[in-house]
Length: 466
Ligand SMILES: [Zn+2]
Image (cartoon, rainbow, N blue to C red; front, side):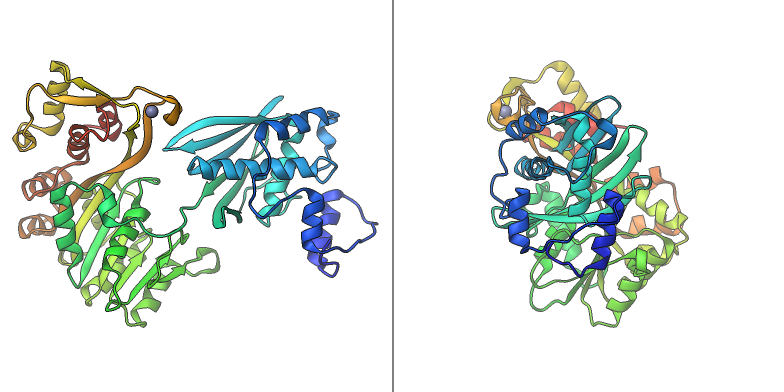
């Protein structure tokens, strides 16, 4: 070991290996890692199949008592490293290491929102793989009965990649799910694929010196990416911008970004109060989880700041009733709100293999029904109408899709809508008014993106019609 005086580490080794007498040998960290076979410089840790072969040939199958730090360690170290590198290369968002009873452990990765089987690890090495991941994320390797969460980081092509790690004990053994945090800078607002009218309406809203703009949608709908695109647009030396996030995934020079930590009592509401004493122009609050945070956010926007935040609601109009249900004052909220942007991510067709076809009568009827009679004319649909569909090629893993793009529903606060909020009108009434004022629903925006050739009609159904 490199730190013979680290008592906590010694105790962890003792408890993990169940030993109480041992000799300590001291070495430089780089030499120890070299001995363990970890080329942590970020080079290729070997092909997955080679590593699995090596593991397979050295198995002696005394299942239950596989020593987690035994001779196999170097191969396991390389295996975990390979999984992490593959995930980053495929642009996966999550890695799942799923234990199976009396069967090999499954390694799956979520790419473009869908899980894919990647490889299998022999049952006998499951514990060693989990232990390796836990060591990398500073988790307690001896504790296998309760969920733990931590973080690890690795380097690939000189870039630091951060990973959030959660372990969960299942009946088949301990499972691990790793979330690869988006790294690097913000997406430019032009790359958001906003429909032209949404783009200009959104710009109007975020140019206001004060008010609150909410970005809403379920987990994994790209809310953080959108907020950072907006901040990137607003980020100039004249503006002081504070952000409170959990976790901080995207960093931008010029922003003052704060990682909140509810575990130690540093909540979004605490951060917001601190920001208000720190001369802000623009404040980002990662999420309005509770009444206290929502209330503080509205107050901040009413006292002359532009506040950005998110909420887990399905649609823009529904967000209003959710906040009023939380106990917010309808007058304060409608005065403060400049807009609500609901969004989803849909899969885009692989540009290498997508196929042009002429829309059938059924397709046209579907489009008309989903977009609605009232607004269909604005699409200027020509006949025959050419659309694209998924085919599949080597580049897209035969799925026909590659990458994702956003669909948006942007509600603007108009005087008419404001008076409905005062009256705490129904979601349906507010939706009707918002649509009249220029809002197009998620489904309508998805149809627009089908006509643009970004995606196919199947993806519209995923957004969900009503
Ligand atoms: Zn393709």
